[in-house]
Structures are given as structure tokens and as C-alpha cells.
Image (cartoon, rainbow, N blue to C red; front, side):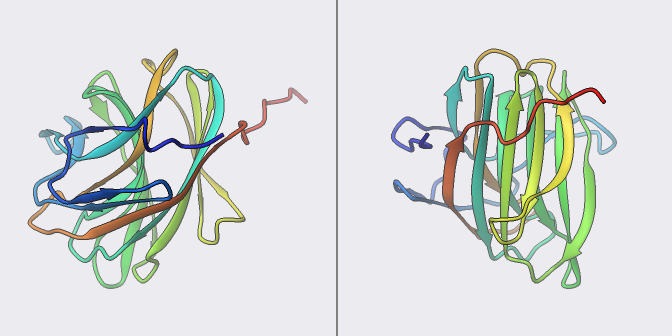
Length: 197
């Protein structure tokens, strides 16, 4: 299965971007982000995302991200976006010259969470694989595109039926960077059904 960029559409279309069959480039704009309510108190829903729609209840979507982020919270990665109150994203967020936060955000009914682990700041190429089993999802990460490690399993209350998924990039503070997405593909679900022991 192919991730067809000809069928993809933007939410919050960026000013500077490039879409090709095998590569998507986004130049982020300052003050862009996705976040809802929790802890920080603010609501942001203005980052660019290139999305496809599917009703397929079982699949995996993989994408390679390359980025030169250099300011706090700069991020790019994979996203599943139903509407401003129901979505998921995974990315590495720049923190400082020593480390960045590999994390994921699940937003259900207008409240976001943020689960993270610290990784080296000099990692500038990361692969993500999002797998769907109806309304349940698994996000995995890889640094070589071959060996994947589970980041988390989650449920989206509004994640059944037709969904919108793809890639995003943003710079929540006063910065801008270049995010390059490639090697994106749709495959049969790589997240196997759970077998009771």
C-alpha cells in the first residue's frame, strides 16, 4: 500500500513547504503547536499537518523524519488528527544541546497528556511506525528503520471509523527549522493481535 501524497490534504497549510511522491518538506513557523488544556492551561491548534483519510481498521503507517531543530520544543513527527479535541502525535522535541524529549501526546475529549523519555540531542533522524487495530493504536520508534521499539499503546475515544493521519512539524516558540519526511508507507498491521496466555 502506498501513502499517496496526491490524495493528502493540509490542515493549517504552511507558507513554505514541498510535497513530492517520495518526500515532504515543511519549514516551520514560530508559535505553532498542538496542545489542549492540561497543566499549561493554554490551547494550541495551529500547526501544519499533511493528512490522509482511511477507514481501514487494521494497518501500519511508517515515516522517516530528518530535522535540524535547535530551539526548545521544535518538533516533527507522526500525527493522527480527528479534530482539535481528539488527536495523537509523536515526535522528538528539542530541549537543549544535551538532550531532546522523545515523546507522544494523546488528546481525548480536549485534554492532552505527554509521555516522554530523554534521548541524545545529536539524533537528527528518527523513524516512527503507527499501527491501528480499530480504536486502539501502537506507536513505535526506530533509529535505523529496521528495528522498532514500542513507545506506547493508547486508545482514542474518537478514533474509530474514518481517521485522518500523516505527518506534522511545528515550532511552539520563536524559531523555525526544516523538517524532511520520507520513506513513508502503508502496510498491513505490524502490531499483532493479543493472544491470551
